[in-house]
Image (cartoon, rainbow, N blue to C red; front, side):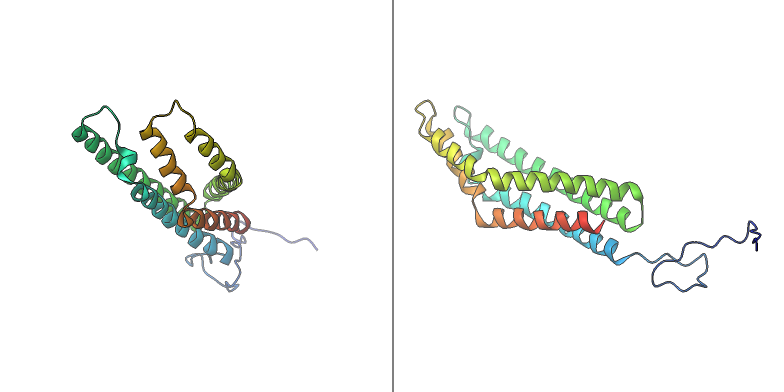
Length: 186
């Protein structure tokens, strides 16, 4: 009972939901888990952009001023910092979407990249949430140091207020959960 295989007997793999007589021109069906991961990665890109814009505009203008520098020069530095941050945030958001589209297209390297970057992000977000109370107590202790001038003390307080802002914490927790979903789905 040996079967003879010819070069024409190869059948492409059958995907879930695809009929057995599908022609070679049909697109393969994207598994639900990959489609879900695609959507989550796109949502994570939007959350990243929103988080960058929020942190950029949530900081008071005093955080961008520098003592001893002409106010006009300080304003130019603030404008440059804002534009540079927005450009980088847009490029990073585009990277999220590019990886998501390659994951959906079935590229194995994109899946691996998404898993590795999501794992690193989970680690980073978890450490930041765990270390937040320690960082807050360190900032509190630093603000009592006599060597720190009033502008630096104000910047520390502004940074502290931004780190414990409910919107920032909510975005971090939401991102952490979504990154875990990406890892599980892929």
